[in-house]
Length: 147
Image (cartoon, rainbow, N blue to C red):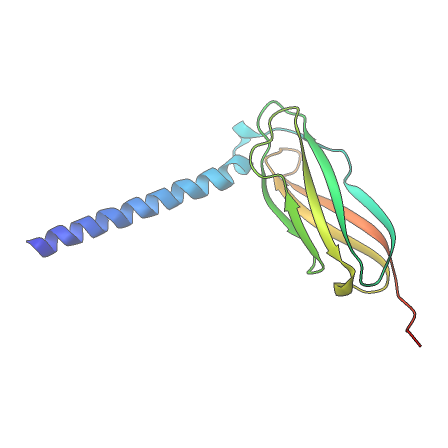
C-alpha cells in the first residue's frame, strides 16, 4: 500500500512538472506567435557602419528600436550570425511607445582583415515579419608587422 501511494505521489509530481514546463514554454514562445499579441516595431537604425578599426580591436554596435504598436513588444530570440559577435538585447516586455536596444560586441581578432559585413538575427511578436536582420559593416585594417 505504501508503495502504491509513493508511486501515485511521484506520478502526480511528474505530471505537475511537465505541465508547468509546458506552461513556461508557452509563455516564452507564445508572445511571439500569438496574433492577438502582435505589435509593431520601428528600427531607428538597422544598419550600422562602424568605419575602420585595427585588427585586434573590439567594439560594440547598437541598434535602437521603438514599440510603435499598442501591445507589449517581445524579443524572443536574438543571435549573432557568427562567432566573432556576441549579441545582447533589452529583455522583457517593451511597452507601447518605449524604446529598447540590441547590441553586438564584435571581436576583430575572430574575423579577418578587410571589409566585413556581420548580422544579428532578431525574432519579435510583429506581424510584418517576426524575423529581423540587423547588419553592421566596416573595415578591419591589418597592422604592419613589427620589425
